[in-house]
Length: 284
Image 1 (cartoon, one colour):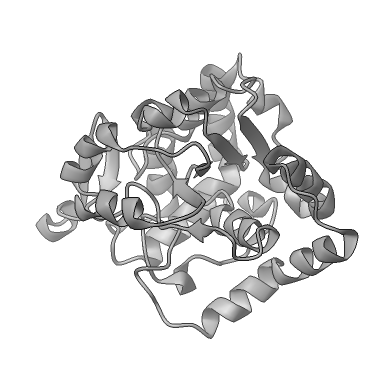
Image 2: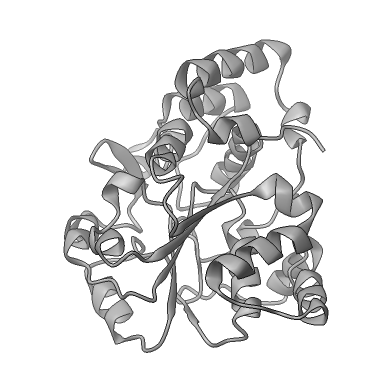
């Protein structure tokens, strides 16, 4: 890694972040003042955050402010969020242990979207290759090793999921699975709407599903220019980099049998007692 590329990331509390999340902001998040009606949209990168954000904005019919991630930017980020009026949907890739404490004190609702980590690893590999805000990776085998060791932005997938799984049975947090959304989006939307206390009609849900399809979102994104003020990603404001395939099971096109065995061994070691891990789906 070159000197220039080393400057693209930094480590905070043992977790790697891009410089788009400044150390000053990360330190100051402890003082962030959440509101009772804030909604957190939580995920590890490449888990379907933009998809879920699109669905949420349609469900609320523009009656909410979808912000950029709470950890995105510098110290001015806190003032920007504070100036927003009305209900806020706030995305974050933060480990649960780094979340501003007032979100829990005020019992804010949180939605955590989970995706199978093999597809995430593949998606992140391509993302690293295409994103100038991230260090260059020279090969898939090397990146997979980085991923399994947690030496990627936002740290270990395993640690991230486990940090949030501690709150699995709290009534103000909803766990959703990317693969469930791909399989039966209307069913997941009903679950999501009930959690939020909303009641969209069948026709409204049909329209939301149509507008939130992967192909529709990718097409619309390709028509838009990069806009740094409108992103739910801490890694880039270029939305053209966000959508690649959006499929389930693409990992099979990249993993060798030996790599899959290594992944499974790491997964078993880390996630043996995980309830969330039991629900993961690796194929269509």
